[in-house]
Length: 231
Image 1 (cartoon, rainbow, N blue to C red):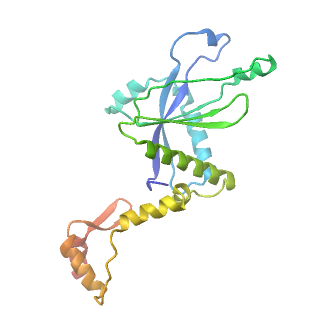
Image 2: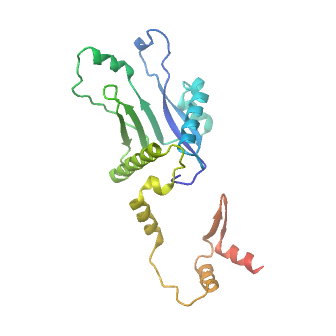
């Protein structure tokens, strides 16, 4: 929705621990990153949820295939610089009946990715928490806060109407959307009494090789458009 692409590619953190008795006692790294390619064009919130679940089911048998090998086969150093994760540590819920109280908890994670997004369901309160981690050499703190606002707006829209198709303005919010439009608009110059054709001819002279119109993957520059009109 934000970048008008038909699909997105992002990494999903996957748990590959063997699902057998006493598997929790097995030491080692059981996490892997699985690339997800999801269609997004025109999809409602419900459609996006269904697409994510279908992709999860489709890739479940391959969740242990090493990411490094996937990137080697694809011939790229990185398939995606954005990672998504969801955690719900249900085993901690058993503590609620023991009288033990968790007073505080801290976690530390260092990421090499541009952005790591993690939703965590608190096993004691049931609340959903959002953690955003980023490489601050590539992302500023203000940009990271803006990403948090985007997620808040997305969750608000999802809760309001799951059948709605998310719109760019709804995700950005009215203020940020207006600010971005104003930033690309440039200074306003009175058009005067010139006709549309005179304005277009001036644009051809000034922006001959710039894109005049675009539809899907096709585009045409001002000079080429003028030559096509004249022919």
